Image 1 (cartoon, rainbow, N blue to C red):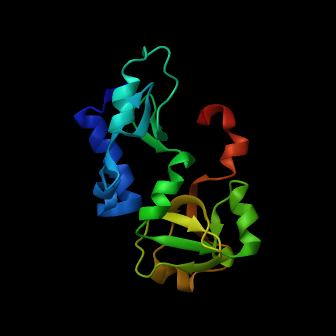
Image 2 (cartoon, rainbow, N blue to C red; image 1 turned 90 degrees about the horizontal axis):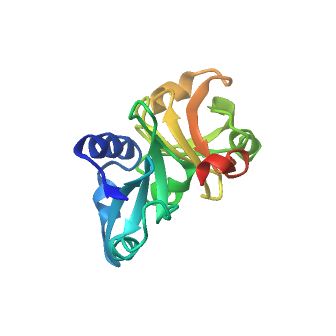
Image 3 (spheres, rainbow, N blue to C red; image 1 turned 180 degrees about the vertical axis):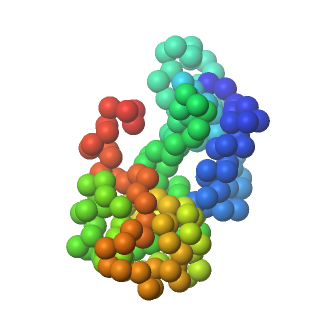
Length: 180
């Protein structure tokens, strides 16, 4: 387990800023103690500094993971967020989308959010902005990127894509072997 390099930090924080904007600093400077991001086997983990110091007693080969996995770097050094980061993204999200109960199951099966399944959307959401998808009971279901801005969504046809799905809680069942 090691700290992220400067390039890795830049790529990771740019991806994270798409969803939570300037709230990144709230993740690091918490009232219950400082937290940090560490890289282990191409995965980025969010962990308390106190627990991270205790983990240095374990050999790297014996350490499976530590803290919450936010995602991983692929071979071309691009970062992909995992659904395991959803509780933190939903707590600090700037832009949000709510889906109707009829579209909730479709989203959880891995489909994009369509206009006919859209219930509400944060005002002035720009195009290709990272959003957290909620059901009508404010339960976070996943996250993605907007296909259209809020203004464009008002005039589009009912079968048009509003949010491109990037991860949803259904992945816990569909992709459990790669999330661990």
